[in-house]
Length: 175
Image (cartoon, rainbow, N blue to C red; front, side):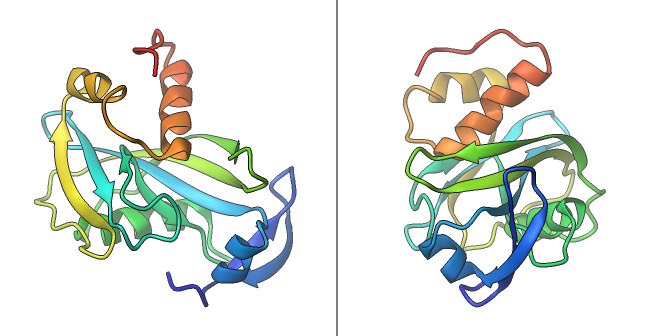
């Protein structure tokens, strides 16, 4: 999505209160919606990537989710499928399964509602070069080992920690 794409602006309860171009929403720190998708391959490994240096938010950081903003009038489910297919460079994915939704606050006045999904991708991936600088499928223990070593997107890290709690898993290594 470009800076001109229109987003729904939402309140603290995730109710739509207006619309704004994405660039304006970011600049004015307007609360909006995002879809996060944890992608697993046929071997149950997790797709991990480093974002490109040109990303508006969290450039060059690692993430264990693909995803992005939800467009105006778009549902979280529609955005999850669209974003997963775009970033992975595939078509024909099954509809990602919604797991939970939470409000992310970055501590600097920026906030967005984040719907966390999961999907299995048995297709060969061709990640979008505008979005993904590096990628690999990692086992969960490999991912856990990297949590304290690599610089991660803070919203993705929070979503992952919440996902572990959602599944009743013990805390991973301290960061």
